[in-house]
Image (cartoon, rainbow, N blue to C red; front, side, top):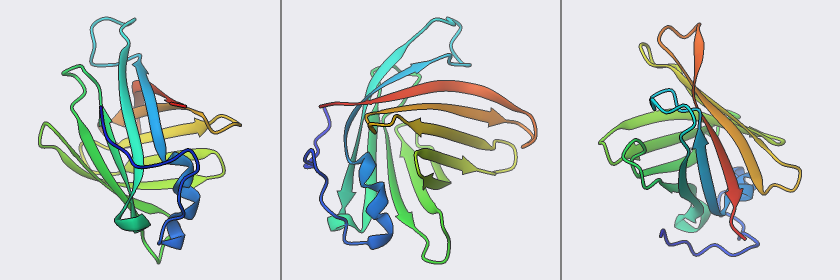
Length: 159
């Protein structure tokens, strides 16, 4: 199980540009369904994700793990660009994959995307009114124009 020092009420980050990302801080159970890469259309992959402040809130860090080889253990570090209204997410996983994504959080809609030629990806997640469930989907494209579902993902806050 991943370690986190976050409490029910998250501490304020030292970087004010990250303050509204405090909604993520904590422990989440995950459930992945409709996986395009799984031959079993009814397969469900359950896992765990944690978000916490890094360096006293200079960044937000995400750890994710699913006890299934199709989903490698991953880590992401999220920080703002002072000149933009988006965030940068540096991602790395146990396969040795490194990616840079853009990220936004506006009201209750969380978006992640990258426009890399040959494998653009996008994610959209919506928070429930009580901020304890995020219903999301990852999509992929080979050309950046035609998108298809990669998988659905639900985060449920652990209380």
